[in-house]
Length: 59
Image (tube, rainbow, N blue to C red; front, side, top):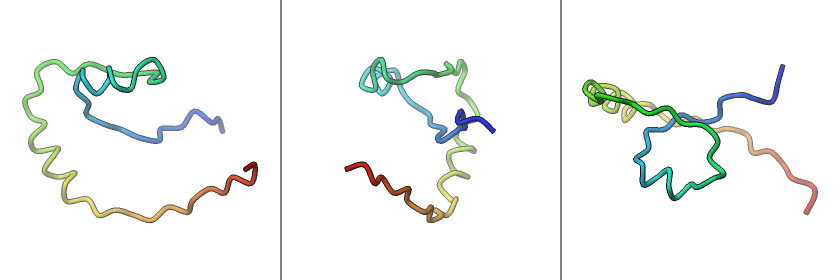
C-alpha cells in the first residue's frame, strides 16, 4: 500500500486556493455547481468520528 492516500476532500473557493499557495498540490475545478446544495446538506448531517492521533517522538 502506498502513502498516497486521500486525507481530505473539500469544496474551496479560488481565494482559499490562493491562501493555501504552492503547497497545495492538486485541485479539480467544478463547473456548473448546481446540485451541491443537497450534498452540503447531507455533509452537515455527518457525525464526526474520533481518530487516534499519531505520535511524533522527534521533538
